[in-house]
Every structure is written in C-alpha cells, then in structure tokens.
Image (cartoon, rainbow, N blue to C red; front, side, top):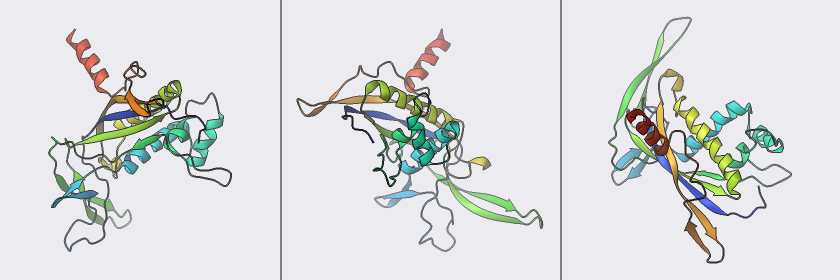
Length: 246
C-alpha cells in the first residue's frame, strides 16, 4: 500500500459501555434443545463462556459509518478516493484496508482493531429478549428469543495504528475520531433499529511507540501527538468537568 518506511505504532485504548442490550450473534451450531437460537458471541475462559466484541465487528461498523458519510458503497469505491487529494475521506481505504485486485497487492489496513474483552472490574449478565415480526396480511406474530448483553457492561477497546508520516497520521486519527462519534449516535451489533446496541465510547491515545532504527528498539514518544485528543476521550471529559465546575 505504501513504499514509505514505518515510523512507529500508535496505541489507542478505551472502553465501550453498553447502554441498551447488545446483541452480536455467535455460533448457532450445537445448540441444546430449549436453548436460545440467537445467542451472543462468547469465548471460553476456564469453565465459563464470556461475551466479547469481535474486532472484526467493531472495525466493520466503524468503516461502514464512515463510508456512509463518504458516500461510497464498497472497498473499491473507498480506494478510488485515494486519488482525490482534496477529499476529506481519501485515507479511508488506507486506514481500514482493501482487498487485492488484478493490478496490485492488497492494501493492509493501517488500523488494527483487536477483540474487545470485558473490563476486569465489569460485572456482566445476559438476558433473553422476545422480539416479534408481524405478518401484515394475517396479523400473526412470529416471536423469537434473542440473547443480549445487559446495559452497564464495559468492554475494553484496543487499537493500533501504523504511523508512516506523523502529520498524515493525525488525519487518520480524525477519521477514527469521527467514526467513534458516529457510533455513539448509532448502534453496534444486531437489531439497532429495534432498540439494541446503543453504546458509549471513551477512547484516548495511550502511547506512541516510535521506531529507533539505530538502537533497533521501540521507544515511547509522548510529544508527537500530545495536541490531539479524541472527542469522546478522557482528556475532553476532564476539560468539560472543569468548565462546569467554573
């Protein structure tokens, strides 16, 4: 995707707090008789099955929201924006990646979105919610149970952004910031138009790990991105709290 040299890794962390039941579907195979036919996705830890948010689900949602604003319908259209120097979304395909075509190799995503696991201090439960679809002709209801993660459950966000040029990376951060702003006003998972999946995000830059070629090591640089803060980040929350106090 680029012939530039990788300069470092920008680590972005935070939380996703569930505000209305979260329904990200899991594997339906091997479901016991009488069990939910729409379970949430879980991973096995010891003798427990614990819900989590797959990185692919979060990344796909963030990209999809930005694509709506950019007016693109697929990865190919995202990629075409790269040629438009004055387009505010020209970095969309570079940040989120694109599939290979006959002329060139695939563009590996600069943004790595890892699975979001439960915050260690967060309690969690799931519920069974009955949803109905109504036959418009007969008026007959077709109820179906779905499993949802209950509100106030907190998941940890873990992102890593490749940095090739620091000034360009700031433009990438603006895209990511907008995506999370949009997510706060949209939904995550299934059934969002029926009340599921409202979330609140809080993210911030944890550290910038610059590559020191001479020492062949990653070194922490806290100055390169000190002037950037996410709209829904702790730094801005602190500013708002101080402003209200005054």
